[in-house]
Structure formats: C-alpha cells, structure tokens
Length: 236
Image 1 (cartoon, rainbow, N blue to C red):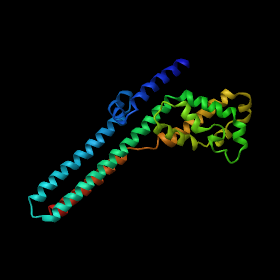
Image 2: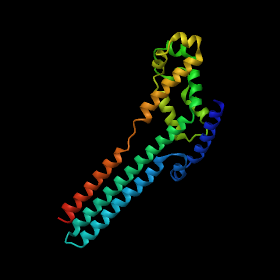
Image 3: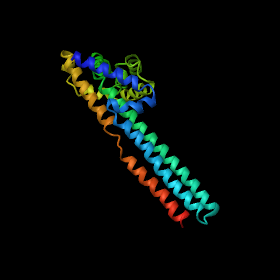
Image 4: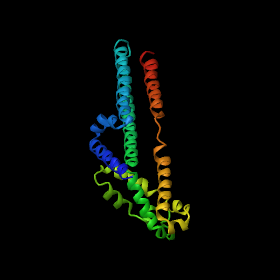
C-alpha cells in the first residue's frame, strides 16, 4: 500500500511539472499517456488545413471568374467561418485535454481522497444531523481549504475544477446508504465504502460523459458550409 502511494506521488510530481504551462502539456502530454494531447494538435492542424485549402480554392476561382465584388465578400465570409470553426474545435479539444489531465490527477491521488473519506466518516454525525448541509461535503470538511492545502502545487485551474466537483458530491446521500452501525463500530470499513461511492460518482458524472464525436460533427458542418458557398455563390 505504501509502495503504491509512493509511486502515485512520484507520478503526480512528474505530471505537475508538465502541466505548469499549456505548451509543455500539449508537447509532452503523450509521454505520460495523455492521448488527448495528440488529438489537440490533430484538431488544430486538421481544421486549419481544411479551411485553408478551401479558402485558397475559393480565392482562385473567385478571381478567375466574373464574381466581382460579391465574390470577394463570399471569400471573406469563408475566412470568418474557417476561423470560427478552427478556434472553436481547437478550444473544445483543449477543454477535453484538461478533463483528461484532471482525471489522471484524480486517479494518481486516490490515497488522498481515501483520507478525505476518512475525515467525512469521522464527522458523519455532523453531516447526517444537519438537514440543510446533508447534500454537501462542506458539512464535514471545508472543501476549498482541503483542496488548496492538499494540492497546493497544482495549477489553480485544476484546483478550481476539483473544488467544483467535490462541492456537488451528494455526500449525505452516500453516507445514508452505509449502515450506521458500521460507521460507529468500524470506521475504516465505512471509509472504504464511502470512498468507493465517491469514486463511482465522480467517474460516472465527470469522466465518462465527455465525448469526441463532436469533432466529426463540427468537421462535417464546417465542410458543408464552405462547400455550399463555393458551389452556389462563387462557382454559381
């Protein structure tokens, strides 16, 4: 158990050093198993190249025909569309990269979240008695203080993500599903059960929901819009 914890901490230190700057994260993310780093580069290059080729083709055809001033306006519209789709798809790819980074941080910090579960079980009475706070982890632990002190070396954007996730954990409901007698008589076992529920909730709600199909949809819509302008307005 201790050996596993040491390996997790060493892996976390390597990860923290890479994610300090966006460029290093994108450049070296693949070395630590972040496939989304490569996806980010492919998305930026793919959308940029596709729109550049279509724009160059449209410019050549517009100036080689009698399209006149309207042709130039349609080419300008294609430029705007290309920039919008490239920037948005690249931003979305970077967003998914951050989610994947956070998932990696979370999985390498399981021992810390286990300690958090232990703290909650220790203060279970306070959580269960307070009806207004029964759905909030803050009833047992100050989430912001815990994250900032436990992950002080982590860039603020990931600490903010972690605080947001922990604050919506239905901790009262999770504790309610654990036998009260177990909480009183065997806190380690109760802590393990609570951690298991917390882990399942976080994985289901935050790590298994983001999809990459949006890139295919964006590419098709982008291509269709540009092709329609070329066919109906520039060539037509």
